[in-house]
Image (cartoon, rainbow, N blue to C red; front, side):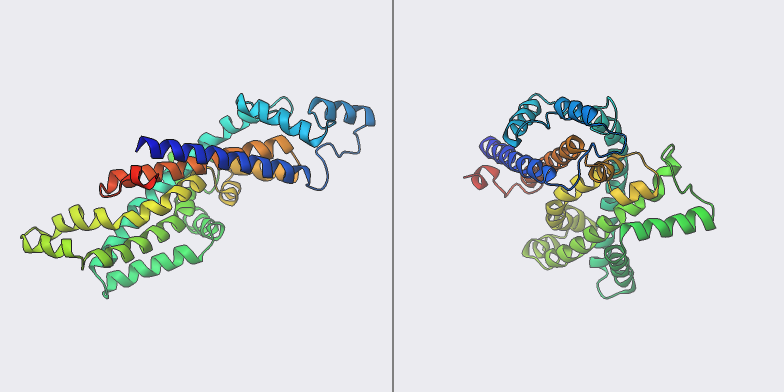
Length: 308
């Protein structure tokens, strides 16, 4: 298992290096520049380019950036005065992470529950209700879902606040909006997987031993059926925890999404690069965690064997 993890870490580093290189080149090819302004004199522009190293050749810029990156320095924003990219990410990520964790808890708990209930009531009304919820979740974009939640629960009924992120009440609507699509995916996967395991040999053996229905469901069926859910949770966790751009803008949440969108529109090279690297590293980490979880959930999987 240790050998497999080390191999995956090595592949992850290579992947991140390739991602950084590609994004570094693409950012430099973006139209416009971060210093385009009517008030920018040639002297000030030259000083700014020298400060950020943009007056050097592309290979020299790349070497300098990678050297700083190895020391954990993502550079300074070209639009936010005296603001390092590290500080911007450190200030914004807690909001996105908090929203993501709440959305994931909501999505996984209700998604798994709906999937199990639907499979145990196949062809009945409860199954139809769960399927309809899953279809709604996968069909409606998150910003539409967020707008509907704001209108009904915030404006029309006045039950919850529609914007900001300053109390528990403020987190409910955006968490549902972010997590509803994940809930739908989890419930569909869980239902399909449960329908496979309910007719498996080990389920029949458990019934023959006289085990109770709930013990069979929880100990045998859910444990084996949840594997496909774990498979998709890696990228889902990364995407949810690092922020949903539109939802954060819709609910006025000061998370990573706002800065990422603004950095692209402002041609803020260092901030685009820094946040892309952060997203990439987080996604790679989550996929690695998922691979390790395979061995914990299902002992039949030998991670050491997979790494050969």
